[in-house]
Length: 178
Image (cartoon, rainbow, N blue to C red):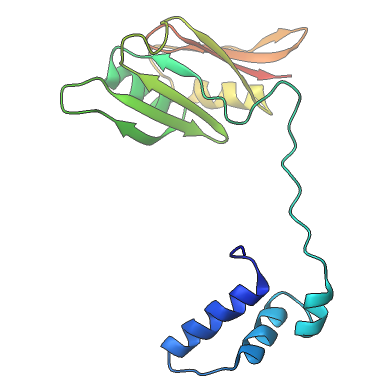
C-alpha cells in the first residue's frame, strides 16, 4: 500500500494523535481523513475510485533525464560564469578527495548541467541547445549584468530567436526560443 492509501493515512493519523495523548478510534481517524480530502464521510470517499495521476507529458525525442556534461578547467571562472552570470545555482558538488578533480551539478529553472574537471568526461568546445520561453528577456537579463567576458546578443533565425554564450572552456550554450 502506498503512503497515499486512505486507510494507511488514518492509521498514521491515529498513531500521531496517540503520541500527543489524543485517543481516537480507527473509524474516527477514517472520518478525519475523508474530511481532509473534501468528502462528506468515509463511505463516500471509499466509493470514489482511486485514479493515478497522469504521466507527465513528453515530447517525442526529448528525455527529461538528459543532463549534458561540460568540461571545465578553471573552477573559479567557470562558477563565476554559470552562477554569477547565467544565474544557475550549485545543486551539489563532488571530489573523491582534496586535490582531486571537481564534479558539479548546476541548475536554473528546469535546466540541469554537469561541469567536470575530470579528463575524459567531456570534450571542450561542446554545445547544447536549451529551450527558453523568452530569449529577449534572457538577453536583457544577461546584458544588465555587465559580465566582462561576454556581451551576448539576440539572433533571429528561421527556427527561432537565440542567445548564444560561451563558457570559459569554450563550450557553447544556445538558449533558443522556438
